[in-house]
Image (tube, rainbow, N blue to C red; front, side, top):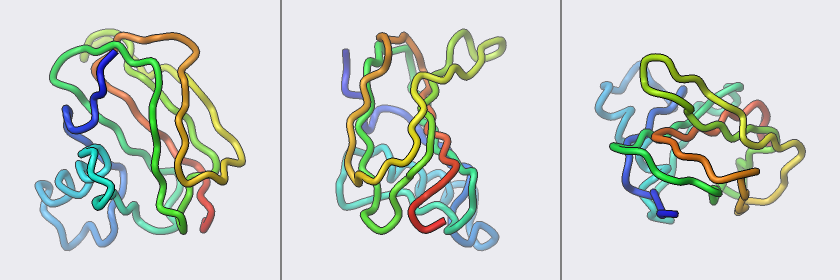
Length: 130
């Protein structure tokens, strides 16, 4: 199993003030969520739920868990962790874990089983400040 932080490219469903950003700037902001640097982050558009962040890897990896670090003032309370199963054209998102009522700003989730995937997504439906 490999630590995939910083390996892929992120895509976010929302960013603050998207009308003022180029596509490259939106990708750069989303990549802050997966770069492994505790000093950077992905700020979603405040109060906009549902929202999601996904990481696409250049190849397939075995994934057995995910570590999430939320901003202490904007913790994801209800969310699900999904992985992509299949190839890029015929695959689909599969829910690996659903979380309700989370109040931890840093949490490690172990998946039910190790999956071989090239994408992982966190789909957030409720946050502390929503």
